[in-house]
Image (tube, rainbow over all chains, first blue to last red; front, side, top):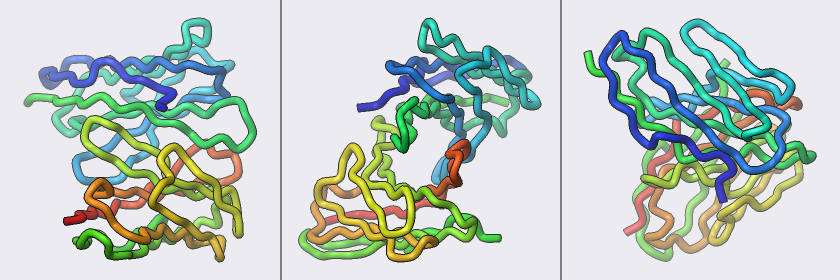
Length: 112
Length: 112
């Protein structure tokens, strides 16, 4: 079963607006990662946030992590049509070689 | 530097046929993974490997076998294909810290 669950399942916004996606998970983690998938392509790593970090930035991306609520959010500021993609969170559990577990993703559509 | 290469990109099988999907990475990564992606299901882990000569079951291993005889290659086999195995298959690899997965471009498999 999936560890991370993204919310909402789909999001449609206008170009220039901000997009916020949320991820909830169930067990303790070492880190949480966000990935992007353009239609028909493989996933691409966006950003990683460690369990002892609360916020991280990378360009127009801002990720927060609240370990007490077991949740994370990904904010894309000033969205562009090229940001249209699916976004997945993946959790790295705090247990040896346990593989990353991906959520079902949020489908973001940015309308020009 | 090719990254992660999957072959073939597309394949159509008849029920009961067998095939092997090849994943090759040139980054000297220890970890390799096979996922399947179905509409609305996100990514589900089939099998994974934590190093040359090792394999382990993921979330949905039934009907698949894997081998990691060489560090750079991870093979996924379907012994007797079933329509339920129609999916997009992704291979990924990661270095020792597993802080970033690198994905191949996927294999679209249809079983008729």
